[in-house]
View 1 (cartoon, rainbow, N blue to C red):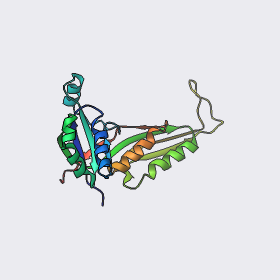
View 2 (cartoon, one colour):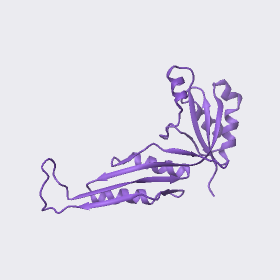
View 3 (cartoon, rainbow, N blue to C red):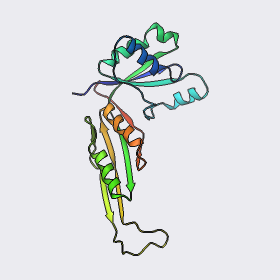
View 4 (cartoon, rainbow, N blue to C red):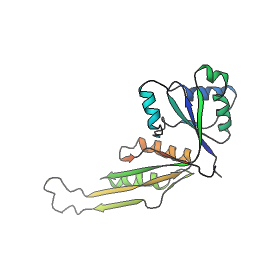
Length: 195
């Protein structure tokens, strides 16, 4: 069974919330998954938050945490230390999972096979959504060259969506970020409507 995850909305100086929470947890011998959504590439801030930050009114962080860590993170943000730093927990939303879309295109069969394997065998907790497409085209090397561009002997393309548990999806999204042949959309979080 997967852990329950939450998004915690924290106001305060940008870049302060996550280090504070990590330090607070470490000082109490607790460890657990806590991520800053923005640092993980999730485009989560509302238009209101973006405008407020542009004019200097306030800054907002969106922390993602799950399992046994969630109550401890709430406790950290309610502490006197957090208040002294100007941090305040201002909102919370239960999360059901995450997803991102990808697109690959290469003229190397070896690279295509490697990237296809990366995306079709995601880490435990993530999966390739139905409807993904991977195609390979081979052109006869003796074929006529194009007028404006040469015809390559091979082209591999793929597109689809990875979805599942937040840590697994973010792990694969990070792995794709170092691959120059994989274009990804920003990870998207799904609210848990059952909560």
